[in-house]
Image (cartoon, rainbow, N blue to C red):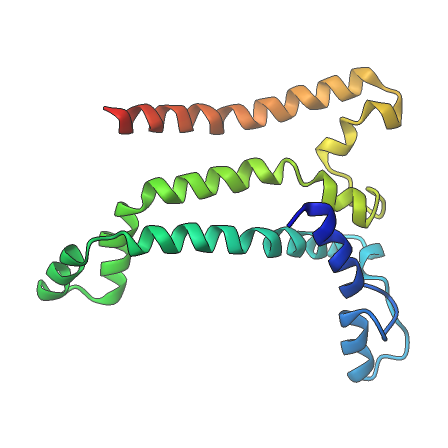
Length: 176
């Protein structure tokens, strides 16, 4: 689902009308007399925006990781059980090392995706109420400040560069 589509869905969940918004409906059931716009509450509104991204990406990550776990050979798991390994040892010492490449791919994809979270913030709050993020500073067409937009783009590139270098090094190791 697109970030804008997910944001519009969650805009209903966070609506300050108790007939529409889930949070305010729960508050009304618990006896709160006033509705609150959770997206205008600084600090907490960032967590509510994070929930949207987690909701979008959980399915993707779980499908990929589940497929990787199903690809772990049963022979190694059976051998570990015969050797007396408990479930935690089987998971952390047998399965996780075998799916580490998949974990890295999912981690990298989500890390880079977090840098593109602009759509959610812009759709839900427009960057107001303390939800400003780096990509919104990069929008020179809104702020008419090309120097700041270029500097922010450079900082974002510096943040992404170590992740990309690490991935390239890992990919080259696997090709050997």
